[in-house]
Image (cartoon, rainbow, N blue to C red; front, side, top):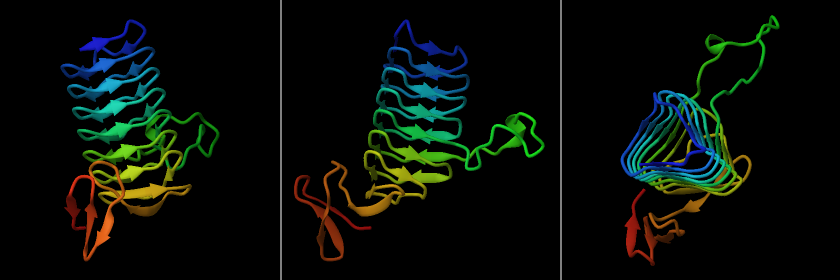
Length: 185
């Protein structure tokens, strides 16, 4: 494990073997980060976020409480995983909100998916296995396996292979000529 001297990693976080945490990253209490991960400059990992093995998180990404990231996920620079559908600083009576005044909305990033640079994911969504969220997309709904989503709000724009290239229709299935692989949704 490598932790840059400018990184702020809580002693109550769990960091797997071979993981590298770079400049000015912050990992909060109760976070669990698997083996052989890379956290780029300025990455923020909030309380109790769970990150699997072989995950790459690019510079400036922010992963808030309630996020679960499975193995082999790519998170591009500037990605934000939010956790509050009804954000307010104060209660209706005007008092500063506390932890008991809101409900964490979870986000799950499934095995092998990729989240493009600057994408924003709202709470209560799951990104399916090998799905691809385009750069700058705003995800408001769950994304099925191998689906490419684009735009704000994000909408399906096709299917993608495990190699991230677009799949071509082939009868009732989908085919990747690069990998010579067929996907049956």
